[in-house]
Image (cartoon, rainbow, N blue to C red; front, side, top):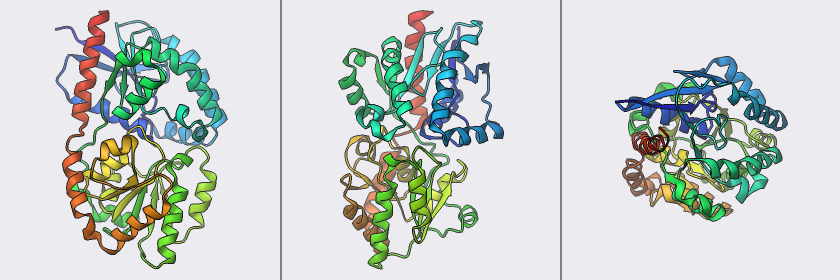
Length: 377
């Protein structure tokens, strides 16, 4: 049986991984585990190979570029204009771009849309990024053979924005690696490495950027401290993002708050499992992977209501309305004082999270690949 040749963009799979990078890495890894009719190649920095290039130097370069939005925008534009043209058409491929805008255009392609925040709230992004996506995304979606979206919420938003592409949309929920994320993930050696104690800290996990509303979390935490309702430290885990300087300054000058910066994928499950609860006040998400991962390890979640987060979380998290800092603080206080109040939420989270697997995401993705391949080859 002839195999499908899939060219998968690995541009985002360089540490430190963002949410999109974690999606691309986990999905490609899951697809490789299937005994399927797929021959998977990776496209990265103008080269095609059987494996990705995740060298330390590239990681350092990525960190530097992320600190300068204008440079990042310039490189993105230059890269998209030039590199994809250099691929020799040695195979019949279909190309999957997991990060919105394809670099390779000479093959039938599929794209993944993770959210539409650049349209819904453009003030959360650098002007250059908004301009780039506004210029390129409509035509990208118009010409795509298929479009993956990571939630019903994103599908609804995209259908409202571009109804003409609604027949191309395929919901492929993100997953979680249940062999790495489980209630048994807590590891004393890893907690010791960060000078943490099991169930004795609040945790935030996500990129340091305005959309995540970390400043609201700091205010809520200060309210608890002022009322002497907790002595638990607040641990912030995440890489730097756009407009992070003011947020980092607030973290630096907040008592009993620590920023661990980027934590390796190996250590993340233990940090999540060791937290008293995970607080995630993000104003908007297309999915909300940290919420799912916390549920999977049996850690209660405090997060914003509505949208994709509530679609994924169901009845498991403790919800508060966006901007309701007092509501967030009240949930944190309750869990700090009486952690047993979260027992039912923990159970619900474990049950619900079992549905979300990378194998299921990979299976649905592969089915769409087959349809596109059959239409072209």
